[in-house]
Image (cartoon, rainbow, N blue to C red):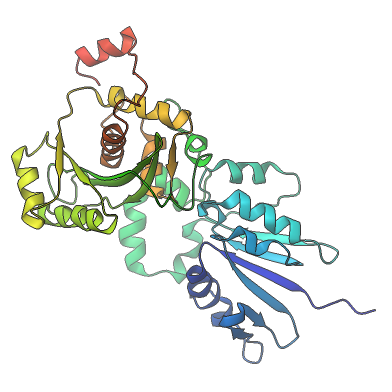
Length: 364
C-alpha cells in the first residue's frame, strides 16, 4: 500500500503573518516555489495544495482551538517564542501530530528566553540548529548591515537577535520572564474599570537621548492589564501626539505624566494636542527601585497580565538591575501607570538598611 500524501500544518502568530511571511514573504512558500511546483493557494480554505497532492493548512497562534482535531505529518511553527499563547498552541499541535512514521515539528524562531523555549530545548528529542545574522549578510540590504547590526553589536539584545543566543534571566533584575509569562493573556476583559496612559518624557529628543515611555494599562478587580507600549524616540509634540492617540484609542480616563524634567511644560505640551484630557502629574521623589518593588510584588502575586507580547518593554523589565544604572523609561511609565491604578491595593515596600544607605549616598 502506497504512503498517503502528507498533510502539513503552518502556524504563525496571526493570519496576516501566515500570509505575509510564510506564504508571500521573501522566503515564503509561494515565492520560492520552482516553476511547475508552485502550490495552489485557496485563502478562503486556508489551504495550499501542491501538484503532487500534498496539502498544507494554515493556522493562527491566536486561536489554539483551531488546532484541536486536524491531524498532521509535519508542522512548521514560525516565531513561536513570540506567541502570547505558545504553550496552548504547542499542546494542541502535538495532539494532532500523529500521522506517518516520523511526525515532526520545525520551529523557526528568535530565541527569546521564555520558559517554553528553554523546556523544548532541554528535551532529548529536540534537534537545535542555530545561525547568526552574519551568515545571511549576502541576502540582506547593505543599509541593514550598516545601521542595524552596527547599532546592536556587542549589546545583550544583539546577542539574542544577531547571534541567536538564548539569554538567561539577568542576576539581580527585579522581573523575570517567568513572572511575566505565566500571567500573559491574549485579550483583556471588556469591562475594565479604569484605563490610563502613563508618560515618562525624555529630557531630550536627540537620537542619543532616552526614549519617552508611553504605556497603556487597564484595571479590574485588583488586577492590572498591560494593553500597549507606544514608547519611542520623539520630539515633544510627537510624544504628546502618541500619548493622546493612545488615550483616544483605548478610551482612557487619565494621562499619568512624570514632570521631573520639564515641569509645567509637560502638561502644556499634552494640552496643546488635546485640551480636555484628565492629566495626573507625578514627581519621582523615591529611588526607582523602591517605586518599582511594590509593582513587582503584584507580578509575583499573579495580579498583572500582559495582553499580547510587548517585547521591548519586557526586555527592559527583565534586564534592568537596580542600583546599576537608570531604569529604562518604558519601565518607569509602567510603574507610574500601575501605581496610580492600584492605589490602596499595592503591597507596601520594605527597604533594607543596605538599600537605604545606597539611597542616601545617591547611588539609587
